[in-house]
Image (cartoon, rainbow, N blue to C red):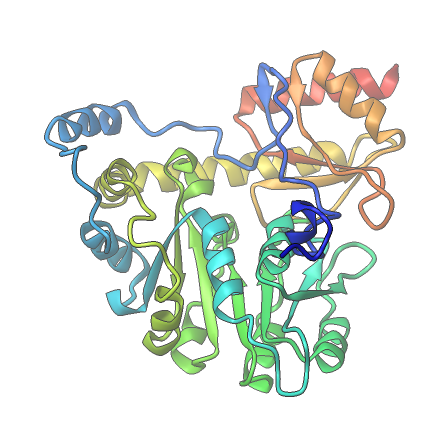
Length: 364
């Protein structure tokens, strides 16, 4: 018997006001909008992959444990295999974590997720899908880490799950080690995820905290260093926590071809990937130095492969860049990101073309 209403009433209330994650399909000669590496894997990798693919049994399901890739990642990160949960990019891992730790505290109707913001939009959508309430702790006025604001939010919200992205997307913010250590050690009843999607560009990591605290896990991804099309993410946690997340992981979440290609890249071509990271870091510093010379451009310190800038008439500047064949991410909306554009660091040529276009737009 119907209780009235339509199927839309069956959608979780927290999801209804949200928009799907949308990437505008704008053609661009210079694509600096998605935080990808601007460098493709070397030709030798593609040749080796083509040979490997010849023997793949595509009529069979992939290895549900991704055993060979798991061993390669364990060696790459210096971690035991039983600590790893592999995901279809960080996005899936965030959803799995929200589903796993969505149990409300005693006497409360909903579990809560906390993260410092503005940050990665998937935290909010994953929380909404899992029926969790979101409590966003503000960053500082220049998007710097604000431990006091985060601690106050935790005390008020009493969350089940906390995400701290360091470096953060879209701001490039990096959190001090002392703040993360204090957060983890002072809140043993909260699952705290350190999201290190951009760790390759900052050269800092909190993987050692996993040894010291069972409630702490670290997320990594291979998407940002040249393998975005493979969608390979990994959660590193003590085995007890990892086993809980494994309960909700789909058994075939990583396809055979991504497993094969990622293992090949990690085992045989990690040196080339690291060299490309070094080149991006050098270009990041050059971009920031250029921004410092441009009147009307405010830029924010960053440790990722992106730079957040603030300009007057951000929508006009975004459109002007797009009309000149340069695509960046327009994040401008009411609130702390008003006037902000996010620029992925490209190759030297791409960055030159972007800077030329930006100067022309600002002068127009």
